[in-house]
Image (cartoon, helix red, strand yellow):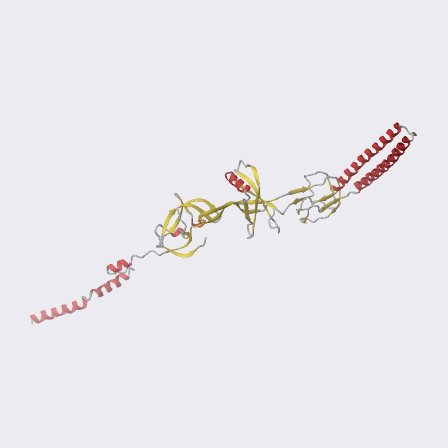
Length: 395
């Protein structure tokens, strides 16, 4: 009986062990379920799982361009101001009342066109008097010539004396001198008469006419001009150039190749013209020398006082290695670019830039023709980073 009890107990222990002690996988699943309640997942430490946790860094999307050799214009970009080739204050040279205004405010006028008429009745009367005096002198000369001829004829017949002949000649000479004097007085009045019609001295555009019919104008009053007249075509663009560039610019201007190209902010059209004036002194405060270029302005798109973007073009430089200016970055060591190798990895490459040419940069060392450089996406790169080309620029 005792042995039977021991056997039953032994079999019971085996049964409990069979229920409790399941496969390690079941225990692991139970452990995961228990731990999962706290937000932690337990996994077996297998070598293939550890390796899969090593995530490779993704390729950085970038825009690339190639370093190219080409002929480029050597330029200096700055801001310029439009200046009229002639700006004239119209003033009267005589006193008088305005009889007629023949031009509208802001009108385009041609050289010689009448603008304002001043009452000229008084001087017209003086001219008529002078003309009558000249006519009288001409009649006196005719009489003096006849008198001299009669005396000379009678002198041949011994009926006149040489003294009378000399007196007749003197009278004729005096009359002729009087005529020349009166003719000069008439010419003086005729010149003054021209002052009563104020004409456009150049072709251009007039501003506001400050007088109206009936107004009194004063002679030679520059502080109160009748109107301002600006020459519009051609027109100047005035630019300040650093004094260190003036020698090269003067040399290129002497060869007839120095020019400027300008654009007006907010408009797409470009204008170009030769440099015609180089100032004779540098401003002490800025070190700049003023130059002017002559620009055709037909149709009128440029206005005096307007600010424009200007590229001063010295000459064309052949076989220059250039990259887009956006490819150039700067750190404490200087300028650099990210150059992409054949495997698609980025490497920082120091470069030397001689000058910027608009949106391009001239490279003197650090790159070779055909090298691929990053134009956009540099901020995400580091040495040896893998890149993915999303666009290749043409330059």
